[in-house]
Image (tube, rainbow, N blue to C red; front, side, top):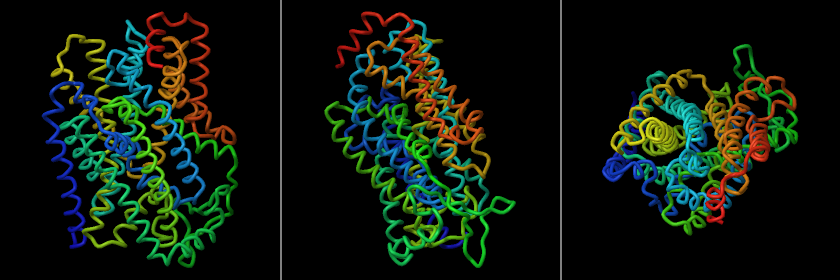
Length: 516
């Protein structure tokens, strides 16, 4: 290990130490009750609510996955995805946040998403609670795997060690941290990590643009590649038999640009629908200390999101100018942020920028692990099998579940050729289609009943798998991102089944009307 690598390592260790201290500081308070551990006692301020929601949501794919897409095939895919996410973020904060905060208290002070759905429909047999917990467990295990892939790629690229060993090291660190402090520690550190992420992105894009000869040089290079710098076209890297981009005379080879039509645009914009079903974001709405502070949080969140997404996309564009032949596969392209940081900054500063990737990964994976474990411990163990279980037993079960989920996620993440963007897109679709429609109908349509809720959740989750693994293989119009058809299908099932079955009870209607 050379001197440069040691300096990078020192900076990252210092960062990790700060994160662990935060966990220790909040550990005592978190362990006072399950409400504190899982929802922070509804005590988050507007800044922490906003930045922790967005940092936990964006994860390592913001610094690696999204720049990798822009580096590999140009502006269109990355930009339309970013636009969809920005629109989804805004409307989620605008129309869902206040109503969910208010309704979660009315619904017997629900502290998890399965709690809310189950209490919203006054369940006696906890079918909705069980299904919600199960789907959260499945999709968050996949999500956590994407974070572990990020850790593995980051550390193995930096230190020249095996991907598998570095993935395990990153997973263990995240696991230990989450076990310590629960939701409060997670939210407090996510606030810090949100700041680190946006600073890291901005610093790298500014320095890299200067190194490339200025904005003009970057744009000139991007426009010289067919379809690379277009909103309605897509660059097509020419690949050899090994799946690597062909290089001739020191330059990467591209084929003719692909057309980018309305179907592909709708497919990428559909990412925005996912926000309505994202547990890690929705829980922040429930956890803020005052409903009135959600307006300030929305403004903070939108500024952070717009800057971060725009800069992340542009990093991929700049990377093509500076290092056109360094990353010759789609999976390797996701390392362009690391390449730019280590090449353009002094080692100690590069280490802190690398901490930005680590920050993104930690801020997401701790959320995923905590929410998934709470679904099992709070909603399945205590909600169904052991209703008189003490808070201490619930948190013990939660920590055991954390270990199991982390192990499963490591198994999924074992393949070093995994593409972060692809893993995230599937889990995002799963949550968006499973919980998004029923969240909107639960909050805004009085006629929604328990049968409709069950039908919507099951149909949405099932359609994600059916479309992704089966229908999409037909290509053409069926190649659209699975979230869009699954979201629509779930919504139709909710409406049809609700109308064909008995209306909700008087008590449920009174609950709904009381939170208007």
